[in-house]
Structures are given as structure tokens and as C-alpha cells.
Amino acid sequence: MPFAAVAVIAVTAGRTLAASCPDMRSAELRAADRVLITSSMNDPLRTISDPSSISDLVAFAEAHESGWGAPWWGPSGGLLRANFYSRNRFLGDLGVGSDFLAAQGCADLQSRPLPAGDRAAVIRMFGVPDPYKDSVR
Image 1 (spheres, helix red, strand yellow):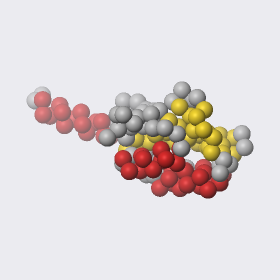
Image 2 (cartoon, one colour; image 1 turned 180 degrees about the horizontal axis):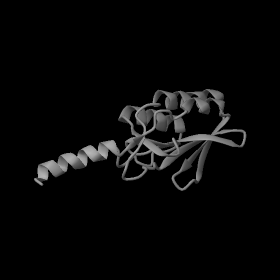
Image 3 (cartoon, helix red, strand yellow; image 1 turned 90 degrees about the horizontal axis):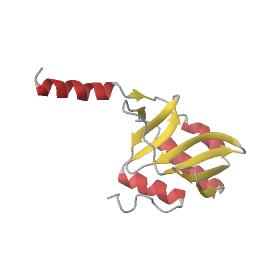
Image 4 (cartoon, helix red, strand yellow; image 1 turned 60 degrees about the horizontal axis):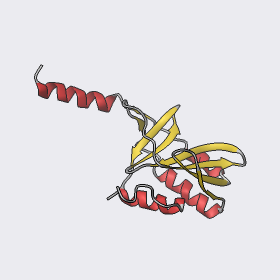
């Protein structure tokens, strides 16, 4: 089979084998009364308990509700994560990578592309130093 045909098949398979997640259930984060910002190793970096700041993070998650999927090559994880809680009950998470968001949804770790401007905004909302500062353009 010619190389071009193999390349087309591989690209098509890559796009179709990524399982999409039509509903990340971001609205469930509205019940959060605190958000624990952690590193990728789950080290606590900051706790957000201000209702307005939590509301802003939830609004960000809801504004990025579409475009999620589980790539066939495996999940992407970011160096920062916001873990949403209502009292001691875990509601969901939102991870930030160099150019993507990651979160649990549809029984798998999902990811989606993240434009640079949106990425900068969510890092500001997290209120911690950007671990990608030297590598993000």
C-alpha cells in the first residue's frame, strides 16, 4: 500500500478512535464550597473558599463544556488541577496542561484543547505560579 494511503488511514483512525464525551457535567460543580488547587502529584498548593472565585472557576468550566474526548493514545494530565468539593464530597476536577484542559468525565480521563488566552485566565483564577511559564509561548 502506498505511504500516502497508509498516512490517510492512520490520521482517520486517530480521529475516529478518540472517544468523545458529550456531557462533562460541569454544572454539578456549582455545588462546590471549596476548590483545592493541587500539583500533578496531588500536593496541595492553595484552597479557594471565596464563593465568587469558585463561581468564576465553575463558569470557566461550563464555558469549556464542549470538545472533550479520550484520545486513543491515552489521557493527558496537566501539572495543575482544581478539585471541587461540597463539604467533603468530591464533585469533579479541572486540570490545566501546557495547551489543554483535562478532567474526569464519561468514565475516563478526558482532555480538550485550550487556547492560550483562556489558559492564562484559568491560571490567574487558580492563583498559583504557572509551572509551564518557561515552556509556554
